[in-house]
Image 1: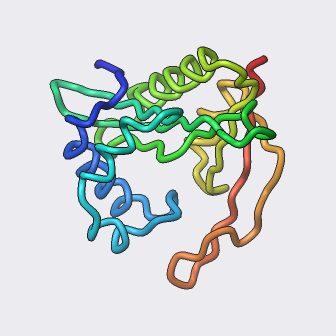
Image 2: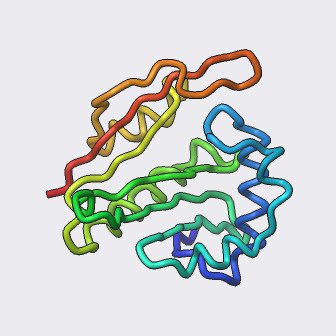
Length: 166
């Protein structure tokens, strides 16, 4: 298993796993499969070069099987924060520690970034495996948003979590 930062040459692989994530776990992401499928991998080529944005991939035999994105805040009053987005591990690879390695890579990167003191993320309250993973790293819930998302006719609550790293 190799965990590394994704580059523009990984955009097609990322786009494929992103669509898989949105199809398999629509409740975990704000964007829908229907919205994303009309996009192209080109937008990820740009994103992988953007300053302050770091997307890590987990590769097993050259196949992208997991992802996580860390984005450093740029606004003056928020620059002490970074956010984790779009974490996903392929269904057939869950339970193997891939999510733990991806989260560890993102946290380590945040610690390297000048001025970052805390990492924020949001998780659907029913995603118990993700919540267990985040709390095992020291993330704490500081807020819950009721009915944060609505998937068809089902409302989903989200927890906002934070990890203080300095």
